[in-house]
Amino acid sequence: MQQRSVPPPHLPLYLAAAYTLLVIYASLYPFTGWHDNGVSPTDFLFAVWPRYWTSFDLVTNILAYMPLGFIWVPALQPRYGRLLSVFLATLLGCCLSLSLETLQNFLPTRVASNLDLASNCLGVLLGALIGTRWGAELLDGGRLHTLSKRLIGDGPMANSGLVLLALWLLTQLNPEIILFGNGDLRDVLATLLTTEPLPYSAEHFPWLEAGVTASNTLAVGLICTCLLRERRLQLAVALFITALLVKSFSLTILVSNIDLTWMTFGSLVGLGGGLLLWLIISFLPRLLQQALAALALMLATTLVNLVPENPYLAATLQVWQQGHFLNFNGLTRLTSALWPFLALPWLMLLRQNAPEKS
Image 1 (cartoon, helix red, strand yellow):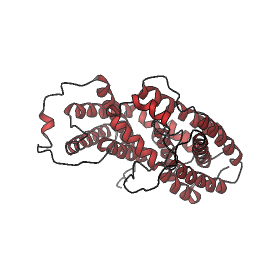
Image 2 (cartoon, one colour; image 1 turned 90 degrees about the vertical axis):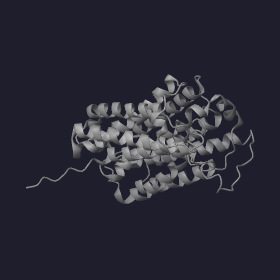
Image 3 (cartoon, helix red, strand yellow; image 1 turned 135 degrees about the vertical axis):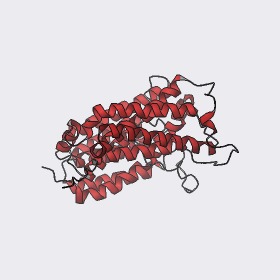
Image 4 (cartoon, one colour; image 1 turned 90 degrees about the horizontal axis):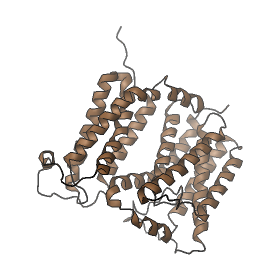
């Protein structure tokens, strides 16, 4: 009797697909000025190694591709086994890097580099090797998967919900946004949007900032409690604490100082108000929580597209040299802009697919 092939587990597959798409976007951002520079797209492969490079760039390129190998191994391992999964994950990452470096020849803000290609390939190989040891925690029967199944459940909605929260944490690495202020489409759709932001007012800005932070805090808190099987508020609180640490870390690394610029009057008022509302609403029926989470997301997205730029934050970020973080900037901007539009349909589908709370 022929043995049926084992399908890959959903969570690693979702994470791998999501991270691959983010790498593609980050590598080709900002997608403008495509042109033929008159040289062969593969000339960079045989060029001498760049004369000027930094250890920071080298380490960044390695670290950027390590998660790709790490996640693809557990996604492929149930079907292809350990050794073949390492080979396929490494091959996939190397081919992806080669394709993206080749396409960068046609972008004026990008420079194709064989050093970048080599460091990316090294990163995906290291990630794949690490994935054979610890990536199994994402597989069926692994400790992480078992814990996730006990707290959240199994299936596409539970797995996609975890990916959604992971992407939300990623958005906190963008130092340009108001605390939790996702959904700003003004840069992504600059040529299509005609809505003008409200004029800056030192008197009114903190309250607009508080509204953005409070509505996003409420929405994310309710998404977290709706995702969980039981009412475990401490897990959602841990998520918010992690997000604040990530936000502080991004400002510290990118601005090169210990920086808590996000800790403004408006953000603190919004954070406290949003948490208080979330604690109260978390006692309401599940379906009502989902509806209020969707309303909070829509309110937050509307407000964040009307809030004017904070000149004080802009002055702080002048020391941030985006040229060194172009991939990073594009990655976090896209994720931040699209996150509410991924969360809304997930909330709509959750009603029919999420398991009942005990």
